[in-house]
Every structure is written in C-alpha cells, then in structure tokens.
Length: 336
Length: 289
Image (cartoon, rainbow over all chains, first blue to last red; front, side, top):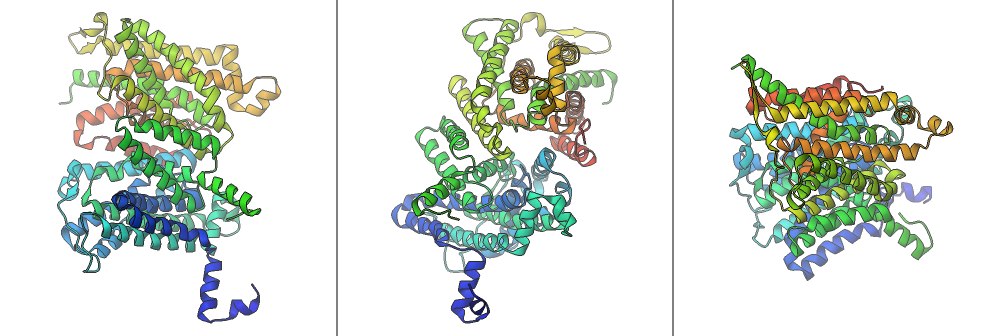
C-alpha cells in the first residue's frame, strides 16, 4: 500500500485501510456462514448453536487473557459467573430489557477483573493458576452463602427478559436467542480483532513473550495486563450474561472450576493466540460433548477424552494449525 | 464448645486428612516442580488405586491390606505404562498441551470408572480389627484414624530415608537440582523421572485407598479432589516434598477446624488462607525463589 492510499479519505479507502490494519480476511466470514447455514438447514440445532456461540464468546475472552496476555488462569469462570449473576440480578430487580442486562453483565465481569487483577497478575505460572482458582472458588462460596441476594445453591430463577429492541420476543424455539447471541459474538469478535492488532495488542504480546524486557522498554506491564484482564472480563461477562438471559436461570455452576477448565480445554484444543482457535475449539468441544452425550448419556466423557488426547498427539498447536497447514499446502504459501 | 476432647479429636482428624493429602500430592510436586509436566491427571491415579482396591475386595475377596498392596502395584504399572506412552508425547510440548492431554486422560479415567463401577459413592470395607474406637478417659480415637496416621508417617519417613540415604535418592536429588549437570555425570535422568513418576502414582494410590473414609470413591473423584491437591503443591512450593508435607498438614487442620467451628464458611476459609499464603510467598512456603 503506498502513501497515497494511506492518506486518501474516500469511504472505500477508509474501510479498506481498516480491514487491512485489523487483518481481516475471508476466513472471518466463515463462522457467520456456518451460523446462517445452521439456521437455514438444521433448525433443531438452534439451541445447541446458541450454546456454542456463548462458549465461543467465553473462549474468545479467555484467548485474550491466556493466548495473548500469557495470563495462566484456571478461574476464568469468576468473570463469567459475575456476568451471569449481574444480568440475572438486573433482570430481577431493575430492568428486564436485554441490552441493559448485557451491559451490566459486561460491567460486572470487568469489575471483578479489576478488583482481583491486582492480586492475581502479580504472579505467574502455577501460583497464578492457583490464585485465579482461589478467586473463582471464593466467589462461588460467597454466592453460595449470600442467599438473600444470590439465592444460594438454588441460584437465581423466575426472572423474565423483555423482547429484544422491544420487538423480538425470546421464543421457545430459541430463534431470537440465537441471533441475539450471534450479534453479541460479532461485536465481541470485532472487539478482539481490533484489540489484538492494535499497538496495545502488540505490547501485550510482547509482555507474553518477555515481561522483563517490556518493563525495561518502559511499558508499565502490570497496568497493561490489568487493562487486558478487564477487557477479557467484559467479554466473559457478556458470555455469562447471555447464558443467564437465554436460559433464564443462574446457578453456582457458572462460577465452577469445571467451567473454567472446560473453557481452557476448548481454547487449547482450537489453538491459542489466534482467535480462530477459540471459535473452532469451542465449537468442536460443545458439539462433540453434546453428540456423544446424545448417543450414550453415561460414557460420552470417554469420547471427549480420546478426542483431547489425540488432538495433543496430532495437532499440538491446536486444530487451527491443521487448517493452516492444509491451506499452506493447497495454496503453496503460508496462510494466516 | 471448645473443650479438650473435641480439640484432640479434631486434631487427629485434621492431621490424618492432611497426611492423606500429602500422600496424594507427593508425586505431583515432583512431576510438576521437577519434571515440569502439568499433570492434572494425578488425582485420577489416586482414584484408580481406590477402584483397583475396590475391585480386589469385591471380586477377588481380598481383605483391605492385601488389596492395598495389589492395587498399589497395579497403579504403579498403570502409571509406568502411561508415562511410557501418552506422557512421552507431551514432554516436549508446551504446558498448554500438557493440560489438554492430562484433562483428556482424566475424562477417559472418569468414564472408565463410571463404566466399571457405576456413578454412586463407593466405600471400601474396613477390616474388623481396624473398625472400633480406642477409648481413653480424655477422648475417643478411631482406630482406623490412628492406623492411618501411623501408616502415613511411616511412609513419609521411608520416603525421606529413600531420598536421603539411598543411591536412587541421591540421583533423584541431583536430577532435581540440576537435570543437565546430572546427565553430564552419567545419571539417566529420564529413567530416574520415569521411576519417580510411577512411584508417585503408587503413593497417590495408597492415599486414595487409605483415605477412602474421608474422600469417598466416585467417578468425579479425579476432578473433585484435584483442587486441594494442587493447593498443597502450590502452597508447599513446587518440587519440595517437605513443603508439601507441611502444607498438607496445615491444610488438613485448617479445613477440619474451620468446618467444625465455622460451618457456614465451608471451603471459603481454605481458599482465602491459601490465597493469602500464595500472595505472601508466591513461590510457596518452601519453594526456591
């Protein structure tokens, strides 16, 4: 791109420039094509599709923290659960308007990230894993004990969600929920794309590779990581908020260790630090779990476990790397 | 409420719970701290030991002690087999790959346990000579708990002696301190680690079998008790057996006393305590900074 086009301000040029700067390519259209295809072809899978989309948003959030920031977390459910409880409480006490609830969920996720970030971001490695785990478990115990607000072990239920934009009711077949979640995923994905390819995103990757060197270069490492953690918190909060609004229940499982672990497994399965990995990993994980459980409700974990072990053996850098290799072979160049 | 017999009983309960945690976590602190393998499947070996013992008791009609020996041996073999195969794959990959593989292994083992023994809680029968209580004027002690403490302490001492006074112990300590240098002086470091891994699985199995009264067997055992075990390893300091020992006993005591005197607190106390401990000493109580 020459200097002329960089400086031209015609609308096309502005769009083209933005697309290049944030590294958009045709691959970015693929998830939306799949989402539309599922809606048209396989109507009965729309509720499963909604689950997949929500987990994709959560995995994207985790990819920001783990894949780009190098934050070792096994407690990301703390941010997800904060969003879920935030959206649930807003719907119960303040407003049943879905967008308001979703914004509140994002704020709740970010607040928890900002409050706990200064503690967990001081450390690295296994210590950080344990601290994040401790944070999410303490939050779970608080929600378990504080029955008057969070409903304790029963969780929050009995709230309703008003029609989206005042026009689209949340129907039983889950069509509104599906497109609503897809819309939120679009916003989340654009947000991630812009963030990771911005100068901020580059310093974050620098911190992941060598925090000491970034510190010496004059980057305030802790502050950058905290900002990243808060952004990740917003996305995780949205994912949690969507679960609350779509299922209309919020339980302690939204804060559980199992959820954090599953999300991490999804992300690693797909491949970290590419955003596509989060999308592919969450899709494969949720769909394989669901299908295996439908075929055999008792032994589905077996299939999932085998998939994970084989994935490490044959795609150690994630499933996305297989596609990259395939594309490189097909087009005779390195893609992505 | 606070009287001597209660405190003594809680003390014994807490210490025995802590010692079980120590037995289970001893192998993990070596794999995690020294071999640098994030082995989230470690607790699954404790579970495997428990289920092997259950199988021995139920289908072969063995008593608890013979089942203990046989099941531990089986778990050691299982650990050695897996170490030679699937763990080999992930030694060279990043820690993320190790997390993925070991989680997959956990899922497979949970599913296998579920398939073989069903999803309900199982407990191992306690032989008659261990079943009673030992009454003194001051307090009542469960014979089983006493037995547990004795066996765990004996194992701990044996472990210490093994590491301190045998040639294998010297090799392991050398490999721990400086794997590259140990290789240079002719120690087969991968072999030492492989033996240690299998041995760690065996200890976990003993912990899983003897601790059955406190940590009942169920398929989700592998994930349920992973967290306290990880806490012990992290708070004690990665790679430090001594650290794991102290951390496990402290955790056992804090948890037992906390649950008795502040029942509403639940697991809260443990997590706050370990969080504070880790913020205070991020490398663990006995970790090398």
